[in-house]
Length: 327
Image 1 (tube, rainbow, N blue to C red):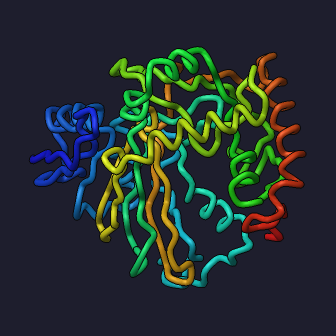
Image 2: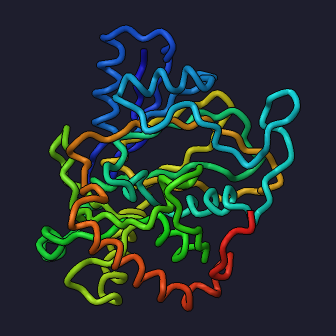
């Protein structure tokens, strides 16, 4: 097995690695230990030419811990009669595509849930001719780049996280609150308070825990909060040494650490098929904000409701015009 660093950030930190001469379906304990060390050091790993199926994706993910979900089809196409994802495309106004397009803004997975994700993995099956890449950004290097005054200012600040907020703010999509069905885990009416400065539970390294789901820093005005969150995100992604664009090839597998790295999908011609297999590893108690039954949860619900009421008027100029999907 060979592990080759992709790049180094401005502070010299290794960011990303390509792992070759390895079969993810046949890993010894020693080989996985080396992969896990590289994962913590580099933030993300790319494994070319693995061609994992749904079951194999889930099995490799379970090496990192219990799953949120495993071997899920992340695609813009319905199933064809032969079972492949080459059927008719989902309508651009469907909630499937609204959610897919929302993910084209920088984020970390599942920060809108009580326990945010440890790591996530994608495996490419069908990729468009152009576009549709996945881009990653090093939130550790972003924190390291801050001046001391900014570090002191944000050390004890937190922000609410909600996928309903990010859909409304980024693309003018207002999915209904639901506690059942396929979107119950994403659009549930809750907002979870998380620190802006996250200490990685395994490495102890500090990073900026921000992105599209974050809003409403308690103690700041709405304008101050939006300005600070936008600034912190810009610090992370504005330096090319802190970002990496992965151009998918069928068979590629990539896994990233949601506790240290941001990511986003890139646009493409949505009439072309794009099919990836997704597996997401659940966080442990160190990723817990609080549960919906906790008294703190009511403040998050109120903050989200107030923010969505404002965005109903502000987001009319965005892609979906402050509307709800018809299907």
